[in-house]
Length: 172
Image (cartoon, rainbow, N blue to C red; front, side, top):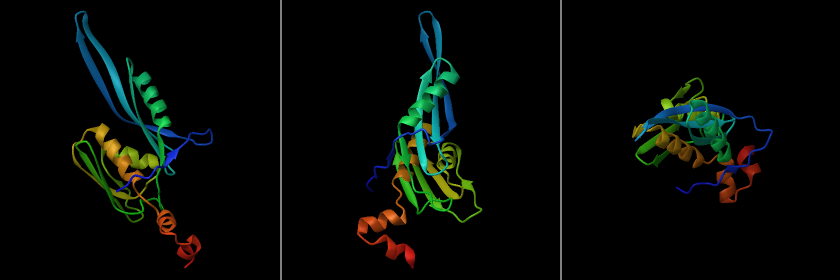
């Protein structure tokens, strides 16, 4: 399926909340001893259809998280959220991770694990059924989940692509 370009420019009126998905300590052994550094995967979203992710690397955990948040703000994407759930079923694959996202009825909650849960909650989805297959690597899960969400289309977009008047579709 073709990915839709839904890039969002950051403005001051968008209030983004950040969530830490994973933190990793990296050790490098050199002649003088060991050097530790940290990498952090961060997801930012306004809980109303805008999502972005970033990776930050630094010598301290807080600096790595801050760099991840700044990187996430640079690649924001708008995705359709319909009454707290996704418009239709969607699957996507990135690297070894494959995700499947399915709409759920009101009151179900977010049935997803780990990295997928952080992405879905940040985008504003409150009721969804999601499953990850293959790799559980948080890097690939975040990327696959955002890819699946960005490939989703809402009813207005489909009607517009088909050349149907929006008044006819949503009136009756």
